[in-house]
Length: 158
Image 1 (spheres, rainbow, N blue to C red):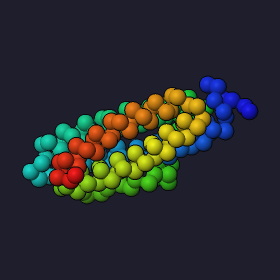
Image 2: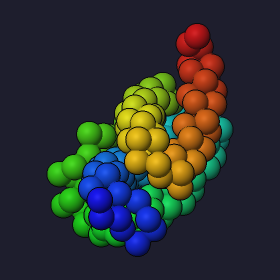
Image 3: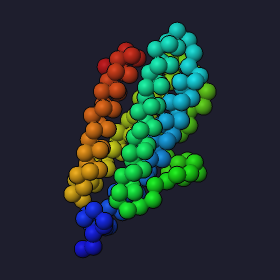
Image 4: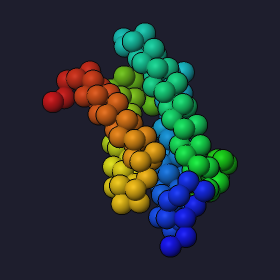
């Protein structure tokens, strides 16, 4: 069994890096959607959602950097072009969504996509003995589950 620079199985690390790159592409789309919502939100919830979307995109940009650095740590190259993001992202651009319920609903759908990917990566990381990726995904999941709860409460969902 060959190992990479941090002592993990090279094949398992390559698979993790591939999945992290897909997550990275989705985070870039998530980030861009949040920026658009922040800029274009209209209606009676403008002030609170304008601030909330700024909080969420600031967090997303940090996660983009962390994910890219984890890909590098595993010995691979992170995606870094818009072409790659569009090609590998499940999350699509949300153009001209300006109302409170539409922006929050889209954000919830995007978070669901991210959470599903993070849980799959968490399983792969556990199988590979990759505590670094495992810890990163676990932290993201915990934080995002709370955000999902709060955004659903905003919409009056259970």
